[in-house]
Length: 310
Image (cartoon, rainbow, N blue to C red; front, side):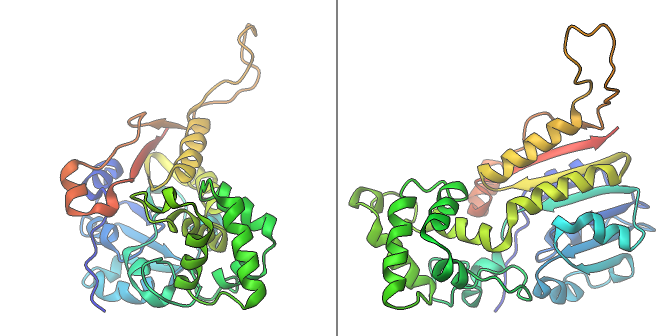
């Protein structure tokens, strides 16, 4: 399969990172190396640490980053374990980190991975195929209440009670084995007016199950809390999110790191000693241009937040 990969908000990320030719940088979501290729091409004596939980992404990196591999370190791991991944290798004082939180286009487009509600495939959805938890387990073994919770919490699906009940009824007859079988169950649980909406009826449910399988939101929170302390003064952090749940975690975590004294306003002097660790640059998220959205519709919901270490 030939992939056409368009890295989202590429120019904005490069500007946000303020790359120094001799710096140390981390691409915590290598994917198909679209961002990494541009970062490493700007390095001379610097180095780029590329992390991905999908071994297929690391396998493809040799070709995608050809000519630059002497400056690249590939790490198979979850960015949620960023602290351990960097500390184990003695990597500290990083000059810039980039995290693109979206599912990569090849993962979505490869029917065998089970991420897409447009192709029939086994229910998988693992970003790291060495992990044991799959979408098949979630759909066929998790309780109705737990299914309802993740559909509501991770997918913001207003028909979560109906869909979770329909899944439990269908799997009592036979296990739900494929993505299109699951789509059929989801459709059967939704009222006619919901099926006429522009958005695919299974989109929110598939997002919720994927997040649950990969423990994505907890990983984002752990990553942020590890990334900021490991930036050098003046180092830059760029995070691209694609839905409100991710962006809320990113926004709140960065706001906490950017906040100084937490003492009550009536205290005459600060006793907490808390100092701002980062500056948000800019304070609001950076959005894709109309031109980028037209060229790459998957960029439509992207938000980039940038912070600089004090």
